[in-house]
Amino acid sequence: SQQGEEDPQALSIQEGENATMNCSYKTSINNLQWYRQNSGRGLVHLILIRSNEREKHSGRLRVTLDTSKKSSSLLITASRAADTASYFCATEDRDDKIIFGKGTRLHILP
Amino acid sequence: EAQVTQNPRYLITVTGKKLTVTCSQNMNHEYMSWYRQDPGLGLRQIYYSMNVEVTDKGDVPEGYKVSRKEKRNFPLILESPSPNQTSLYFCASSFGPTQEYEQYFGPGTRLTVT
Image 1: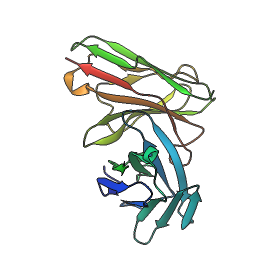
Image 2 (image 1 turned 135 degrees about the vertical axis):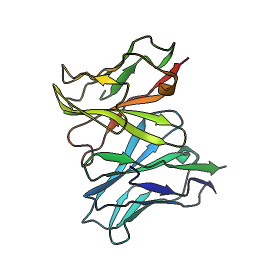
Image 3 (image 1 turned 90 degrees about the horizontal axis):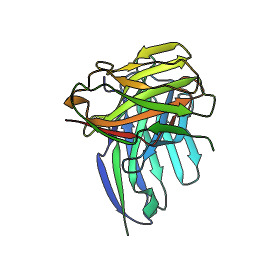
């Protein structure tokens, strides 16, 4: 079952620009998480936002959550070459199992 | 160093030949999971374990077995691998339920079944 879906599928921006990617989900959730994956490697946890939170920051990352629209966004400010990666949102399904989206591939151009 | 290790990292095998991919974590985590990642399909959970001797099916358990005899280890067993199990496999662990706690992922095992 597809719960979280990221948008866009792929994104290319110039180094220094901000990158925004979105995640939409279908059922109500308690938490939403964002992960990063460098090519072919394991996922790395970035941030967890709870359903009663609207915004959370971590360094250059800013995550928002709009439960009325069932959507979340991840903003990376002042992008760097090292931010090139795939980004996944993860939510829980009706059975409280975690479900990952298909990811957004972000490419930072020099 | 806190980590999740998987072995082997790369494996090419033939249809029907039983194989085991090991997974070990040194963080005393209760929860462990196995995922497979395929192009266009994202990351899908195969099995998970909430504690020793407690395992449960994820979204795509067919063709796989797991065991959790010790807290730190969670091997993935393919009794009779088939080509459709060619994939990139990840083991992950967390302190508690995966929807509430961050998961720590291993480096991945790239499996090819011919």
